[in-house]
Length: 347
Image 1 (cartoon, rainbow, N blue to C red):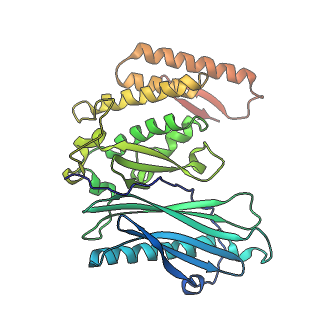
Image 2: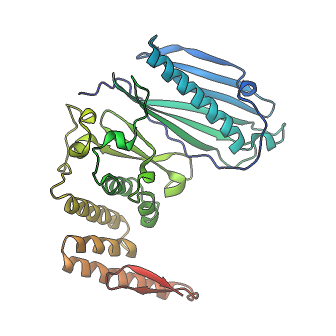
Image 3: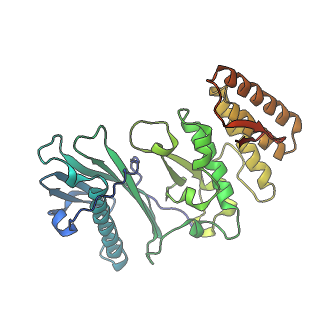
């Protein structure tokens, strides 16, 4: 069936807040002193607000409420409200608001905004981004929550809901998200980006649906690239994943692709070629990155291009030798190299 997503505002993505282990005795009913909906309504979505003034902090949080009298919508609205209240309650604890001096300024606060990336007759996908500041801190923190659901049943939409069974989804998403991240940021390191996109389901748990594709969120505090709060978004077009999606998640009208969609016939080769292109793109801006050369060589070997692989391994070794010469005296940990060109540590 075709998507019918009519509400697609600009996305706002905060980072996850820092975690503290302070126990705070505070009830949601005490915390949330005022609750009301704003006057404006856009495309059957109303903005509700929670405004609370505590002696040590302020709460100014907005969240969506869908305008409809049917039971499914009422259930969804109640779930959103409950989720927001829980995030406020946990945010106050994480940010240690009750530990600050009452008179300290600027005051501690939690604010929010939201994004409804998909609102179709069958599905809804939204995210709520929270920003929190603790009085006396150098900068603010943030975190976000996503709600992806089948409207009628209220069941969550998971990766298992989206994709056909028995498909190598983690490997596919790992390669495509890595490709996207290496083109978005040049301030991180490849090792960090590889770790963030490891082929396991937990790497891709933060996602939302849009008209164009699936948006996977990666915390900038973990992958680098920014001193502020926010996330890097890897957009994977539905058209790229068409063969692997369940039929109900394949739009009738898809965005045109500049490259061929993935297919199961030669999937391994396609993924390898994408990886090679990703490393090459990274190396165009980081010409002395030995790790990039070595990893590209590994992927060249997978598609049976030994000459290209050997050239990359040789260049990686040259760069590593040059770095060893310019580095301080070595510690007790040394680095050796296997025949595959993968680094191994030995004591």
